[in-house]
Amino acid sequence: IYEAAMRRLGHPDPKGVLMVGDQPLTDIDGASRFGLDAALVLTGIGKVEDARRAGITPTYVVRALAEMLS
Image (tube, rainbow, N blue to C red; front, side, top):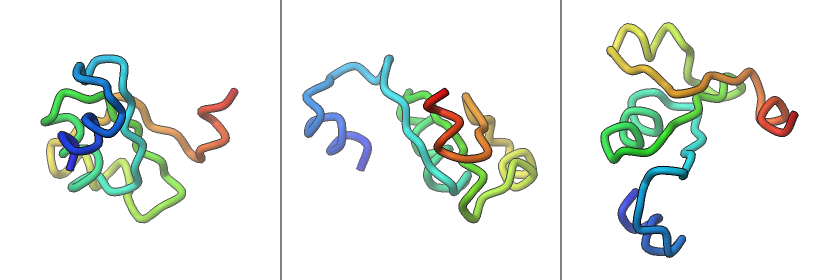
């Protein structure tokens, strides 16, 4: 899915692209494995503790999307 998204963006290099998601096991881990920076948003179902238990380290952790705009 990340390859398809990058093609649609017309952006061949994963550097400089940020994946934003709320599920550590799919969104954050998948993006990290693909080489994308990943922001875990805590307004969804995922928790930082879930990511840590699974050995997943998001690039960023934000409480809400609005934090990313400030």
